Length: 117
Image 1 (cartoon, rainbow, N blue to C red):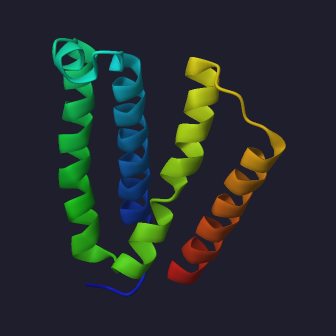
Image 2: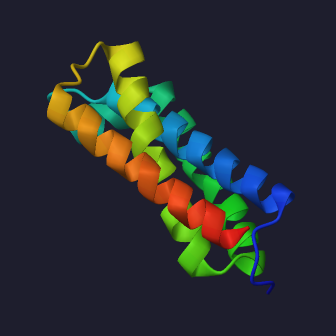
Image 3: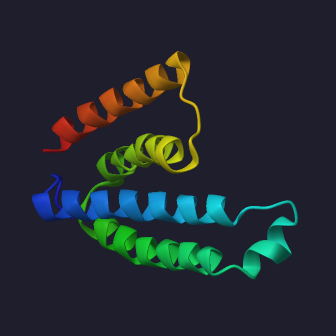
């Protein structure tokens, strides 16, 4: 394992972030009052499970080449992307405190990313 973050591995981490976001959007879309039985009958739930499986393999490939201390904090970008996906797709509200938290997570990810290069 190398101690640095290469461009292909950064791309794979970003792919994992997008796959995780897609998974969460699918699961949110399939959520209902009768969560488990109702959700299992919806194709969007299975699409979310597919994204989870794809992310699992991609994340394993990342961990083969990137130190966990760099890769895992970069995955925190998923928190940022999921917040924006919730706002855009589900019209969820982002208040000032929420936006500040998202900004701080992004700043932390940037610090880790620069450290890993």
